[in-house]
Amino acid sequence: MVASPDQDQDPDRDQDQGQDHGHGQDRDALLADRTEIMAELARRGLSVGRLAVLWLLGAVGVAGWAAVGLAVRSVETGGLGVLTGLVSLVLALVLLVPAAIGAGKWLNGGRDVRQRLEAWAALGRVTDSGLRVHARCVGWLLPSVALCLLGLATVLPACVAIMDATDGSADAESFTLGGVTYSLGLGATVLLTGLLGLFQTVDHQLWAERLLHPVPVRRGGGAHR
Image 1 (cartoon, rainbow, N blue to C red):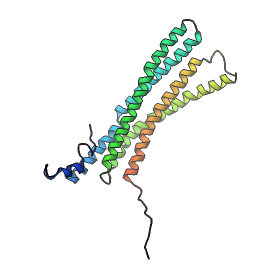
Image 2: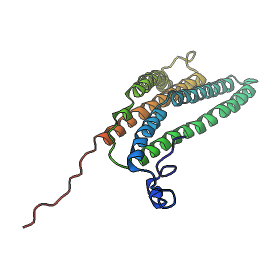
Image 3: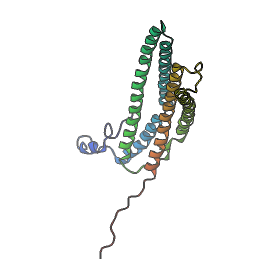
Image 4: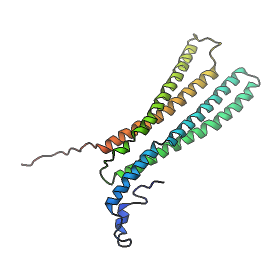
């Protein structure tokens, strides 16, 4: 676990305890440690493991929406299909609820990494361009964009089918509520998965750019006569 400066390496606390622990931690050494630690945090925030977890949660969500589509289609058939629909609905809840909880924890993990980076950055000017982790950002960006396009390609036809059904122009044999429900859920889940990955990498790049090239603050006032 990588510590933040206000935990294991708090310079203020070390200064207060200097009489009890020798000279305390030298600020130059702390800043040297900061460079390595911030680079590790940046890599952790955009790690292959975090991306794989995001995709796994998306896959679980897709399976959950497949169960929802099956439930709706089973209810449409009537008879014993209603019982199958209820079982499928329970399965959908078993899949979708943990996926939603996992997505929340995934977002909290990214937020925790950012807070630690901000805490270390507060020690002084940051000049390490390695914080951009370009290679990792590209590795997140490309598949995330592909997922967004795939999600849109799935959602849009389902929306068109719904609009055709509402005005009576849809083919009754080809249109099924269960199929459209699954398509909407599948497309929305894939799109959301892509957007989360896309936001993560773009947000990190913007944050790193602001950190490495801060905008100078203009202060008002001038020469007094």
